[in-house]
Length: 144
Image (tube, rainbow, N blue to C red; front, side):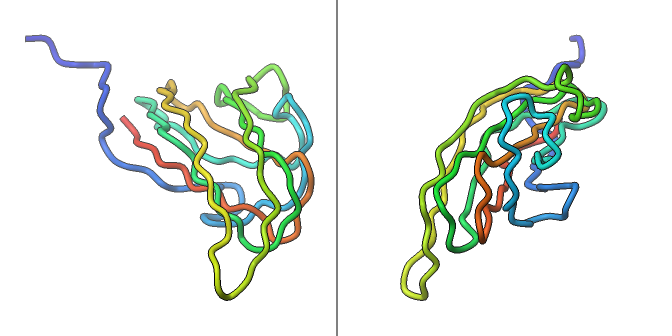
């Protein structure tokens, strides 16, 4: 029997996020682009450098009071995301107005990817409009 060199199941779960700013940091600045090359796009997740990975979804959680905006997601080939040719627009999700109060939860949304990514590929995201409190992104993923 030949060894499976193309796994379909994750070796380990991975919920690390925003490697450029630290895990759980709220994104507030607008990138407002469709290329992924904007300075305010942030790294959301990176596939395993050797075997790649699988991104099931990204959970977006409002960090407090925000105006309405949009979060745009980009697949990056592992090279500099500041070069538009290294990115591919993947999709976007509308973000509602949120109000932080002591008696109710703030909004949280899931953006579904269900996407197997090659080794070293990354996911970047950027807001369409700047917000006050920000949105926290947590990838639900696995590395092969």
